[in-house]
Image (tube, rainbow, N blue to C red; front, side):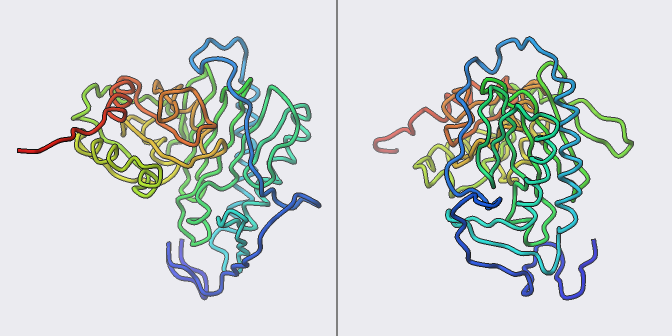
Length: 318
């Protein structure tokens, strides 16, 4: 995409983007939410059989993604994009707010009895069925005109993520899944392609994404990260949503991070799991609320868990 007048190429900050240091403190009159957002604890194992048909819910999730793509792309790389700073010191753009409003508006009509949890407007409704939304995952990229950002839409039933859509309209990519319906992605030819994780069974052959060194260091697990990097074939930090999709496509064997919230990962769970992988928190629990994630190709999940919980050798060296 060529730069507009007064703008730089991808990734270069623009002087004429408006950044307002405004702390957002309440939800009145549609104002964004600044408190904690939570999803109900899962009442069953994520691998437990599901007795239901999610075809209509998945179709709705894909329509929600279509609407979100249109809203978010309308302001992407805009020279006059309005950006605010939230109470937690993270950025929110006008597009984040407008995209979540658009999704919520459709849900209020299509699924009025369902609950909603969104990054920008918190939790509404009280239901065993809860839509979990991150309107723009990767806002820091979005506000700089970098196309690596994603709209994440999930449906959790009794706390278990059952439907997930990850849409990257600036790159023309989308991934989606629902329990018992498989995991899929779009292709240049137009026909969806089914996803499947890799068959790698040895740590020494694994390729991993650790997301951020700082994340691991902040939780006191930098030694674990170093041990991980020494045990595998290749380690990189590929970003936010994308490495989970690479894993579901069979291109990575491990993705883990810290500091994630429900709306950051809920949509990723069914995509990874329906592709044949496994998704837990860093300690192996079925949870999207513990502020950590560990996704693997399944075959290596227990090996990675053991690696990350094995203390480094101590004592004198020879």
